Amino acid sequence: MRRPRPWVIVPGIWNSGPDHWQSRWQAERETAGTDQVVRIGPASWSDPDPADWSAAISRAVASCDEPPVLVAHSLGVLAVASWLREAAHPSVEGETTVGPSAAGAFLVAPPDPAGPGFPAAAAGFAAPDTRTSLPTRMVVSDDDPYCSADRAIGFARTLGSSVLRVGALGHVNVDSGVGAWAAGRALLEEFERGL
Image (cartoon, rainbow, N blue to C red):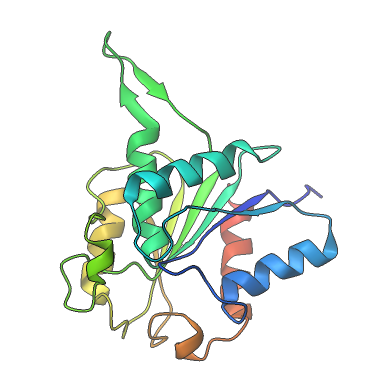
């Protein structure tokens, strides 16, 4: 059996606290000591700067032993979409230059930058606008207060992501009561098996 791929954890604004599923999944891997996990470390957690977050993703990906799976939540989804757009760009000769490599991206509960609940501090972040060839899965809650299901599915369509609707799970965070979100972990593992 193949060893699990490394993970790069990409939380949302203000980082994910210790009770958030991202932090719990990271702690499980760190406690086991067998599978690599890296959390991005931007300098701008509370006043997020897209360039800072993109650079933080690049540093985290580069620190992995092999191409990782990006595990993003909330604003982290928009940061990953931006990073993916920047990671492949046309060169002067018209050929594509590929930047840092990742194996795939598991994207959970994107916020809508045009929505009323979007934090003003994150105004520099935008909705996905470019298709990616990287395998991606968008996990969508039907009652997310930060993004309608239709809008999230539109983001997924733009990226070329497969969509998985998980019912009424709010913003899929601590306030939603998902805890360690074992069902989400199973969804991530299923996604990873397909890579």
